[in-house]
Image (cartoon, rainbow, N blue to C red; front, side, top):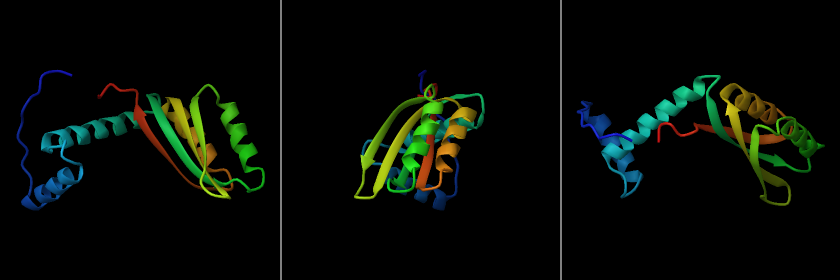
Length: 139
């Protein structure tokens, strides 16, 4: 990271008050400048994630009932078909019926999204979300 550069930002007082509440919720180690840097980094990562050819890393979290008809087998088939894009998985038993699976994927944005959509589309997956980031050029 290069030298810090100072700049001014003008905004309506109400928006500034809401922003200061956000800064306060983020904890003692955060100040306005750090929260603004976080927001800028997030925006840049989101923009890069929109590029279908960008290299991204994603975590796909899904919740499902492991008693659902051959659901685990269908999930395994998709994952094995894309073994070269799946970095790691973690399987957690939430209760007697429900499981949480976290799948770490890495590849081009369009590939990671397609794999996530295939998994999320399997009948029996109750909930899921893909969270993606880039490989770190904005850090």
